[in-house]
Length: 606
Image (cartoon, rainbow, N blue to C red; front, side, top):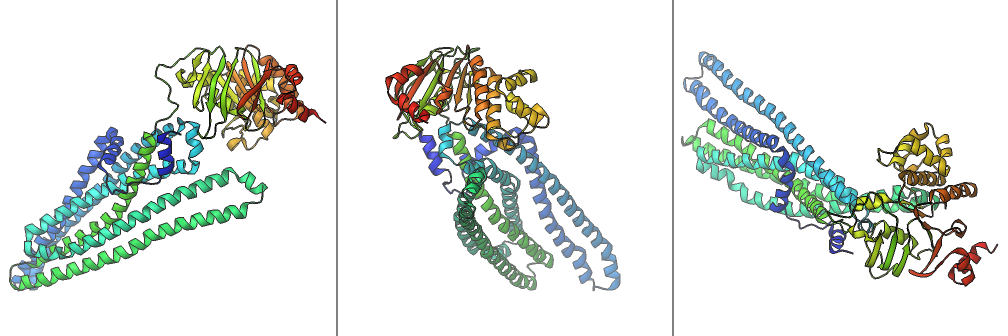
């Protein structure tokens, strides 16, 4: 297990808890850089919107201290008010026009920032998906699928929220707060000081809320990953669950984990339910102090009614971003945690990286050799210990032994799904770690016991993205292994739908299509891992006849429990507890009265 793998497995939901990490923020902005023009336009629009909101307060003050005050000083008669009404209407129209312009700019700004966010997150989502796809099987052995889905979907979506309603909103609110404070002090520094008396308790309340929200949000993310893993496992294993009548047990387990997630969400709700009323209370106290002090100043003729109204207007604006900043801070906190987990995942180096100048033969010759190979899925428990053998090009070699003896592991090492702990696996005389990984796997095709088919048509599953394969070649491969009867049963033949994971087909039909897929690829090395274990005897006999022809000129490794399927192999390798104990042809091994002979007697005793 690599240090990277261990760190990701154990710390994937543990984060530093920093509200803002400049290093992570820079890296996140790297995904915005290709769309910096649109992003800059969005930021500039935010600045204009904030300025226009502040201007509205200034206009309100001027209309009150201007024409309205003049009408009051003139005695407030009908004629005076009629004369002022037109002027006030013009001022009101100007304020309404500014409000309308602010709203229109807000619509544009939201569209622009969302376009930037979705494009940037699209790029990040593709990068994370590609990175996960290139990890070794060791990585997937140790990380639940639900957790990885949470990374690719939920965490990327959290970063999208940060750009669309988090970072952008925080920038707007901070800019608005600074503008309000400057405007207040320029108007009347004493009244500004009185209005800001509530800021210290507000800072304390916000800090307590931030700490509590950070803890609650972290629990939400951890428990969400657990729920996703439970859902994925339950859906994937639904056949086994139903077969063993485990629905109620699975339901109870899901209910317990879902309840824990709900409790975590309720903790965040409890924090907000306390925080917002406290902010409202402080806002009311702040406005009451302003009105009290402002009334005294008006009596002393050091303040006008318009300035007092402007102060109340700005104070209401001041508390609005305070509420929003606290909520957006929660978004920022969660997004930073998501970003930290994502970038930790992206920083994990794959232990199967191929060299840039790896060996890339036009076609493999098919020579396979293991030299003193030791390997274990867990280092302390080796599955193979000191295994050595060579398979010549075009030779058919069978691997037999009890379950867990290491037969399938050999196939995984030859295709470099895993790397050996000690020793070498050579293909055509070159260590598989020095081959171009893509070219190596193109030359070796594995037909597994548990066949996986993708949702789509039969043709798409046989072609596997190779445009050079003609439909006629695919049909020939199907006829060669008897899979043409599967095409006859499906509506549309090659265009027939197989369903998710091949759910519309039987296990045997999926194996037939997997054989056809392997043969259509025309590999230099063919690995059959219990490839006929789920077909009837008649189909198995037909496949064996087809394979005898198709194996000519092709190296074939046959992993089998049924010894009847490998009697004609050129050589049989007998594994026992991770070691290669015997090898030879069928007759020789039977005469040796060893492990193979014992297995043969057990299978054919009847």
